[in-house]
Image (cartoon, rainbow, N blue to C red; front, side):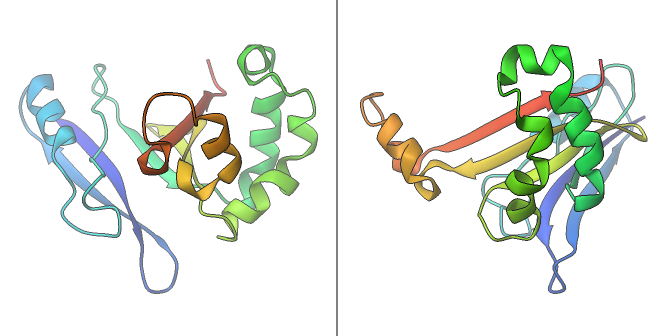
Length: 158
């Protein structure tokens, strides 16, 4: 038995919504279900349910909240994250950087990655067109960046 979950947007009250499917069968069956488009919510055309874990565990996502800032600061300060994040001030500026995202003041969406019942990292998504500095930076990349999306992630627990 496998379970795959996916974030579908927010309800009328602003609460995050998700869909979940239980798949009885093989890992390949679960992967096929995870790759199916989500049929509802604001991201229906671009979202997928998620990925079923090989161990039979479940990876899921929940919306980042201000209550997560302490854990996020801890992750951002860890050596294995800083090796790639390369921003020593990141643990000290979590509220400043992620507060507007949590409050919906900027279009970047940030989710906590969960494995089973444990928070293990974050993933964020954004449209490049919503960030003019990225449009300028990617101008010579050979594609229309205004139609592209970006994604960043970190695994805080290893």
